[in-house]
Amino acid sequence: MHTTTVDSLSTLTNEQNGRNAALLARTPHLGQRIESSVLPFTLDLSGGDLTAEQEVTLSALEKQSARTAIESLASLAKVNDIDHLGGGLELIPALLMTLAVTDYERSHFTIEHGHTSIGYFSTLATLGFLDRARVIDGFRRSLDIPGHVSWVPGGTELSSGRLGVMVPVGTGMALGLRGNHGAGSHVICHCGDAGWISGQALDGFNGAAVHRAPITFVMHRNGIQLSGSTRHIMNQDPRSIISSFGIRILEIRSLLERRALFAAYREAFTSAQNGRPTLIYPTGGAFRGTRRARSRISAGSTTWWKRRAPSQRRTRYPPTRASGSPDRS
Image (cartoon, rainbow, N blue to C red; front, side, top):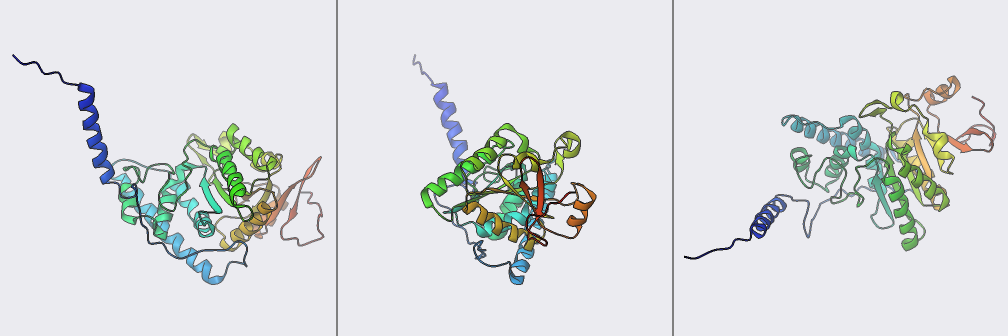
């Protein structure tokens, strides 16, 4: 009689390794070598204003990215799943501009509100980094196109999920880039209107100001959180709190107005090179403010929110009256 001893753990391990290998073989955007054919569209923050041709190009890219995102979520609905469509669509215009100024050496980007991932993947697909069909059919159903922001070709190396984490991590990246590359180093951190109040985010804003990090924060304000509207959950204005750390607040009416956004990007880049991190804040219509503030918003003006001890005041940017004139609204 022969007795055979079976190592059950070894058998299970081998079976799992086989499943892993099969899964990776079906994952085109993970591997030792990945090639992408990318559109040659770039913008220069140290150059001039956004041209009419560049604005038309951005408009076309936005529409294609939004179409991909919507088709992906329609595909997702067929398996009774859903995603954060509003946040994902709203990310697209500003992210396209960010990708156009990113060279992946001196300049990088990250995304704090990781639930906007369908906008992230769709934008990368439009530029040619990812396969569009893979984004549509694989979002939230595959290793390479998951439900939160993670690395893929052309993407950020800093994956995000927990709100607020990318603010200090992006600050650390900016300091590392400056230490290795010197002048011209820059990080753009896209963030939401909920995670900014978390402890780790506040630490990041503080660290950015203290260490004069070359970083620009872009706040996306869709006014919605998982438990309800931002207004009903925590009706706090981020500007006074974040500016108290020494972060400059640059107000624009909307992230969807391309020329104004690019002008804000250029101004924030210059400020970052001078050791002053900036938060670009869209006032839009969600924050009502005072009657006078609303009239300025409707006129499409751009405003610096500057910290002035012992009180705070605003000055227009670009100035339309005597420099430093107080706004008593």
